[in-house]
Length: 513
Image (cartoon, rainbow, N blue to C red; front, side, top):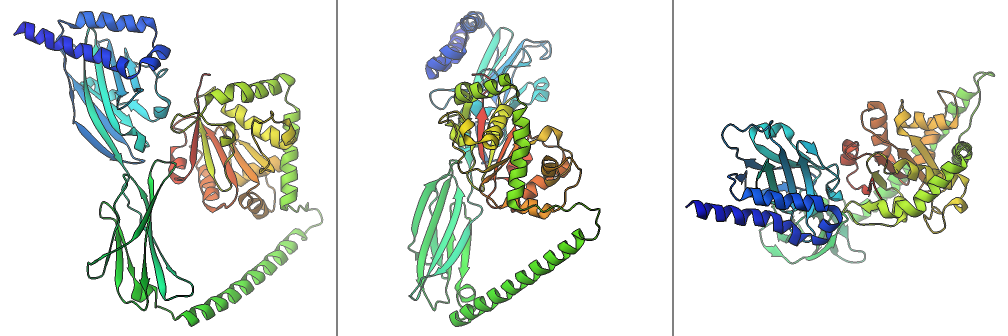
């Protein structure tokens, strides 16, 4: 019996050692030193007679996209052996395909993140308080569809080791179904459309108010978040007092009540109503603008000693550009050389998308109306990127390295050092315009920044915690229309803001070349 148990342990240890090598030979050669390989062999030789087990908390886990999950495995100890007094190593791997990924490692009670796969940077951590209860629990935050797969929990205490595997499935239920009703021009038909994003790809069914199936046309397109954007539509003739319901996988649905939605107002009355409403709205806006301008003019003419300032879009742009031009002119030649070298040589090797894939430098320029996060550890070069973008635009695109980044669509970069902010967003921008604490015409400034697709708002070194600035930034991002926004931050320091900007893009910088 003892010989039989010894052979079982030999097979287990061989699988622990050989499987990562088979699934990631190239990656191992690049990231694992010969000393580590020798250490694994020594551990194997010592483990033949060891008695140690690891058990999974549960075999399968299912969590939702954007949420959190805790994967757990429990390890046993020999009688009289204390966890706190042990040489403990815990490693979690994702092993669903080649190459495998190292998700997290704790070696002798010290985090070892040098070999952590970039896709888990700032999202995976070990619940260390559970170790004293013999639990190795891995928490993964901000779940992505690509996080699905098989995870291996490997625990080593002293000369003993064992592992278990668990399966994680990340889904995105089609909870939000958007419906749209549109009359077809020149006919007696209406187009009913349902749209929703989720994962996995669903089947969409339509039925009328009597439960009878209705044929539909359904289109599916992938999203940058690896979800499926599903659009399904049917055509109906009117007058029609029936109801129609689209049903996505999971039972999420939307219902069209045609009696209310299609015939609530006769077509002729609809047209007349729209004309009347448009006329009233136009008059209201003209009156409001006249009163506002009149009141504004009176307010600025009350005292001869009060300084008069008029900020239109052109003045704001020229003043902000001049402000940064002065600062960039004060850069030493060594600083300018450092920025140029980093952008042309180092940055292309460090810049990746949110899936750990290399991307071109043009990805650093957000599209009109887009918010983009650039995350990386301290020293990775985030501030250097910010300086380069601001300097290049202020001094003219001719100063940019040839072919590096095209800023022709951006006429103004507003660069804020978030480590120094004290007030709300527009207060901080006005400090770039004047040394005084208060600059009038804040609404003009807001309009000049928020509405233009030629403005890039660059927030360098953002970190949550300044409630006044945080709330004003969220309002600005919610209300702006064309302004491009690039936010640089360390991983995990802007979670609440990222939750607010659900459609924002994310880029990452490695700490080493």
